[in-house]
Image (cartoon, rainbow, N blue to C red; front, top):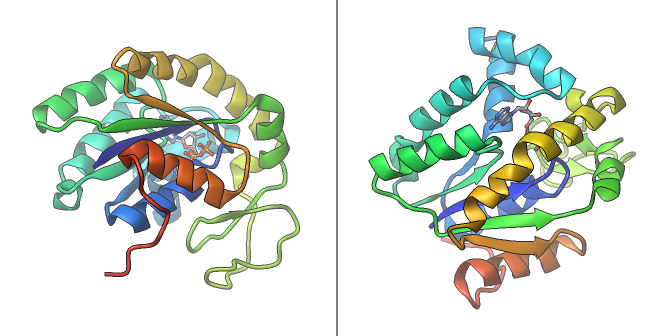
Length: 217
Ligand code: ADP
């Protein structure tokens, strides 16, 4: 099962990607998390990426494509994977098509989580995140419900970075959807509603009649 989760910052991709990872037992490939891990580790790439992320801008296509080429070749991707945060530009989508061809894989579905811009701005400003498991929470939440960690604000959820992120998304990432619409791969899901309601709609789009139960094995 090879999936792309597509949506604006704040659309709920990360939350639903975690659900899909648990449900299908396939890796969640989140380019934002990969970049933040590089920053945390202080690698040369992390040092280069840090000010770019803090400003809400995009890291270069070359870097991101290289990162994904390495990641998709790893054996844990063999049974499938969930892409979250990539492709974010049309050149990235074109490079991914080539790579998928080389790997003799294809996407089963592109899930588009649709949320309007006012709601995105509202969700992102003040959002808190767990530094351990990356789950997100509304403002003023005390601790992570999953692991008890103290929550932090992501640097790019600060007000000065939220607006550029949405603007860049509208300019560079919205055209990616048209790239996939042509292939009839896109399922549009209303990103409002409860997490469970949205999960159910996603699973129904992915495999017809699934229920959002967690894998136990
Ligand atoms: P969100 O979707 O909420 O903005 P992410 O965690 O997916 O958050 O990404 C955080 C940041 O990482 C982006 O704002 C951007 O700077 C960088 N980034 C992640 N994926 C890509 C990508 N495919 N291309 C360019 N930059 C990326």
